[in-house]
Image (cartoon, rainbow, N blue to C red):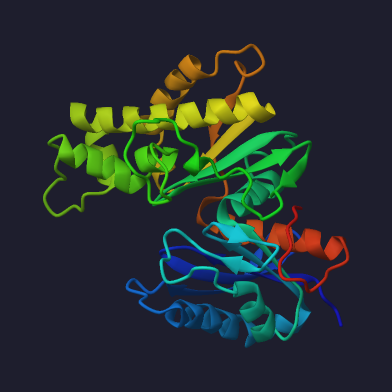
Length: 324
């Protein structure tokens, strides 16, 4: 059988997306469902995954797919093939790989965290292409990340390495959704930015929602509270990035996600704050740049991990990890 495509799934708190992807990273067939907003039972979310897979498998090109790659909100457990996303409360130790493998006709399946998938995408096709050591992040409803070390994706034993959103940067900070205190995500995610601004007296323009995008618009217009909200987020991100760079010596940090869409409203204070935190000689040259892969990063990254699985000989274990 001619297998020159892979299937990719991108699973998050807002949407469950799927695609058939070729060896050049092109998405040939797409399917998408919203993640059930009030998923009181795990099977409601699982049904959405099944619907996406059924739509992909009905495509004429499906027989060309040799494996399935999954990038999921985490934590994930690639060894067990299960997921427990913080932002999908109905799923705890959910056996996602087994479900996908069964629905995909027994194809080999690989599972990585969504931040690892984004790192794989940016290293394969985006802003980290050609770089040996990189941190790639998504700053959106949550904050995640993945690492490229020595020119290879580094997912770690369970597929979660590089999860910078849950590095604590404020030991006296508030409780994060993960249970720890003062995590980067609790300070720099989109909802955190909007909440902080609202508590400080900011309000969106009439007809707009209280979102990070609305706060960014106010910051561009010179609203001091909105500017302070992004400065606070930038400080948390800078502290987390500097800690990561000090630990593993990355040369570039790539930042994508909805909050990164604020542009210089985020990146200008981030670069300034990074100068305060990345002080040792071997991290002072660290670059911070916007991501290039956009909303397709999760799918492209899941495909990249999947191609690596095939290059390494495939397999149908509980879960696998890898990078393009």
